[in-house]
Image (cartoon, rainbow, N blue to C red; front, side, top):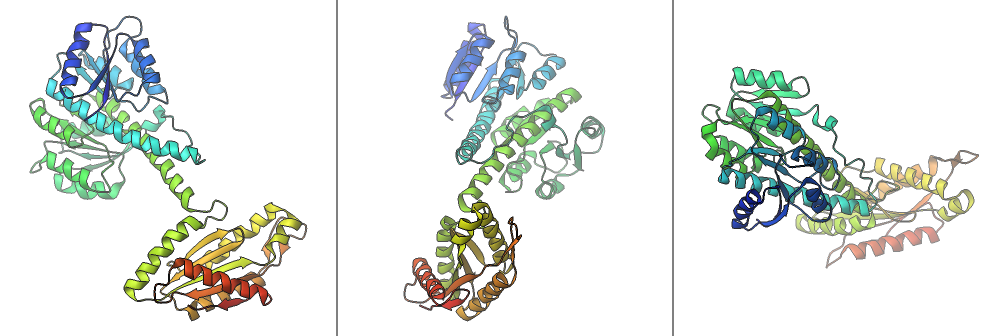
Length: 457
């Protein structure tokens, strides 16, 4: 796995030891001997993970971690503290500072490298989502706030899989004040419950009776509904080999028994923050997709989407031997609306036209803004004669119901003209259908407007 690791340690021998381990697995290693030096490297170099000592002169590792996690450009970079400090309160301080893990020297080499692999995989996934979100920003999508605060770690929806007893009581007592908990007590319930719940985090015991913890984690990673859900496992000290395998198959974090409540809280907060950060990035990307295929004024699909969709509908109609019809519509004398009342009133009219089109269509029909005041309606499984009836009903509504607009009179009386066609045989395609509908539309306009003209292949 190609990745760049920043090792931060003021003792050359310690840094060299980590560098040898990392280079053995083909990681690119960068070294900093101080906190400010590490922050400078992070500001202008792409780093995939930071291995951070705590006890350094000047700025200690806790403060370095806080600054990394509070800076928008580096908040997503995983940080593993590797230190001689081993007291529970030190672990909690590190995790509360934002560290993704806290390992005490001398470290288990196999466990360390498994943790690095796990966090680098997560970083690469996050980088991909961030790149898509940046593309969204370039397209003009409102990103909202991408900053993660302490409040983002609260009110998590958490699934707990643990046997009844002291450990479960501790989990509930520690987490219930700040989160919503769902508890299952056997492995058979986990996958079904997780798939239905929309959870921010799953906390799984590896000691559930008659349950293979690794297989269960693999199952959750293979299900579409739970693939992105963070998994935190609880293991005994003698289960280190299972822990390492778990990290390699996609487990996000772990707790060693006996569970320390403050460490539990800190690790849960870290996972929920990361989940919500990733979700914000994904939401931004989805907005960009919507922006690419919809018309921002009317909310209808745009011409780009129509081209792709119509091609698929024609292929489907050919395979199923079912009819397909298409109508093109134009608002009559729309230029006069803009010239007389201004483009804002024109936009009000177009928005209401789109609303009327939508309300007159079935769920399988597709309405698109083709450009300006022109709209296209695609009607699958519809004969031309029935399509004529549908759009003629829409034409009558356009003519009979005034448009409510921001003018002195408050309303405008407008009409629309339509051209209708049906998919023909012999290689008839989308461009052919659009050309026929356009020809029929202009015939409707030439014959006095406010009418529907059919034109078959």
